[in-house]
Length: 88
Image (cartoon, rainbow, N blue to C red; front, top):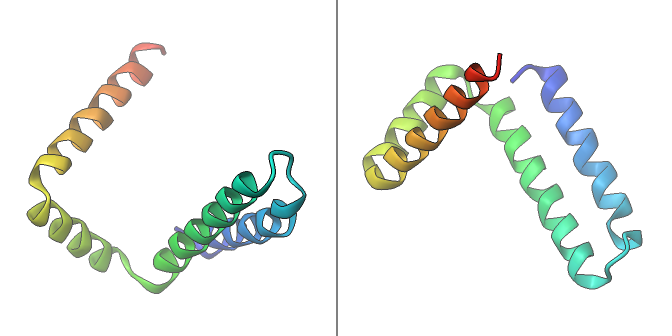
């Protein structure tokens, strides 16, 4: 992700965090919004702190530790890709 992209995600996370307590739905919705903002920040920071080779190494490590989930995720992504391309 480029710096502009990560900055946009960090800005969105900050905005979500600021508005979380005023969202309709009470405490559960606010807690979910705070959790989402935390995940957004963590993801943006991950992309800022690592280069492409690090990300590939992390992906390979996850694939080695969780081969079944990796195959399932690859199948789901393939299905979504085929559906997207078939609509064009």
